[in-house]
Length: 143
Image (cartoon, rainbow, N blue to C red; front, side):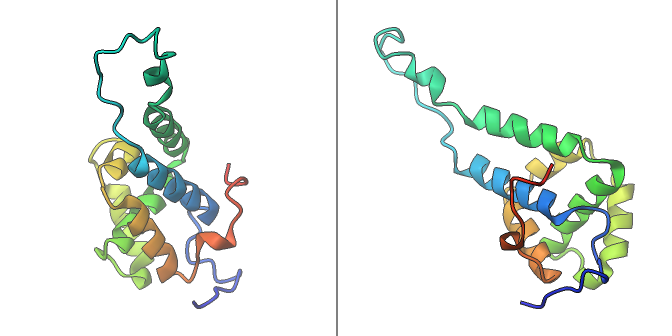
């Protein structure tokens, strides 16, 4: 994989560590079970386990809040990356992709992006197109 010189900065609108956090949380969200099917057991007899098993809501909430905190430039950059990963744009067309994302009027960014079933793959592919990888970033320092 080609390493990008720090001075080159082809993705100035967003910190790649933030993109990696979105990738990680999106993957976690997709991996979660939809929840347990209710059965005939009594919740007090089974230790209220059904309440403790629905972590998908908390992951989704964390991801939504994280994306909501993005400024306008970061939001457009994240959408542009998803489009590049989806091959709607090439990495060389970064500025055009960001401009098109700025003109997008399809509701909140988080809702639009979470509607993409392959979002983590698209973002990962886009980072790759820029010679970057989530292995290059510590996911605890993205905020």
